[in-house]
Length: 335
Ligand code: GDD
Ligand code: MG
Image 1 (cartoon, rainbow, N blue to C red):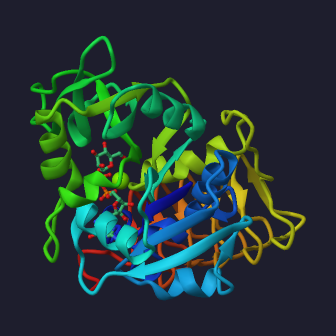
Image 2: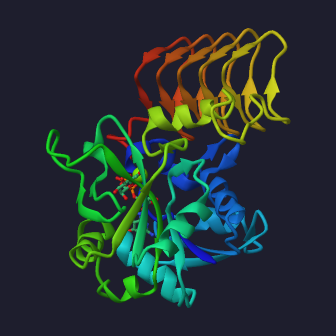
């Protein structure tokens, strides 16, 4: 079985982190999100993954230069211009010559779904496409479905206006598709699978969906990105668990690190405090600084104090500064 992982979006909602690193290359549990996804796919018997690349392809190729990740062969399909989700799936699938049932995953969702159960459900119906669903409280930021008792999708509506969603079951971003879906996607222009392709399959009665209560999170905004990381040390994932402080992180003996992930390469100075936070491998927290509820790729100066703040790779919090709910550098000012 082959799979396409969509990793070409701009990651706008995760700026400034994504000003330097594409979203699927950001770590969750010290591993790039895309590597977490490839491992999930490998567990379901996927032997080859096509990365649907667009924005910033180089970091992916640099991270997996031998075309392999977690024992799975990687193809790189680099779009000449962003083709949106369906356009990207078609481009990637044709690039790799996919001509059989295949799996698609959005490159920013993390789940404990056993993908082989979705494949089995797909095979048990007459589906042309099958979507994994998850229940959420506010479905308005997602693709929402109305589902018949047999699992047939009666309606698919992407990002409905608040209060108009037909249910609280949302598209969780993992699909099993027949190759005939590719023929529904016009070539050479942007096509959204959510806004065009799924509704066209619904019209033919051949879109099915399976809801599960497996762990699920879309890491595309700072708060869930932070939470996805903390979930890896809180014992929330079915089988996955990460070390809080990765080997190779340099944490001063007088610093206090509590309920946080600190990746290899990060530096935490004397008397610094890090709580409920994620320090990526390039982070430097200087002496006496405190970091709470924050994600740091850059530098937090001496005795500075940051809360619920995101510091990008080029971000530098001045010595002694006190910040709350801030983005450094400010993505609105960055280009
Ligand atoms: N290659 C490529 N080219 N990838 C793209 C492009 C493109 O033009 N546009 C988006 N992507 C990738 C993103 O990198 C991401 O991995 C995935 O497609 C989905 O895009 P998002 O921007 O994260 O979409 P979303 O989170 O607003 O909504 C999607 O995911 C929800 C679940 O998390 C939709 O599929 C919703 O229906 C769904 O509920
Ligand atoms: Mg998303």
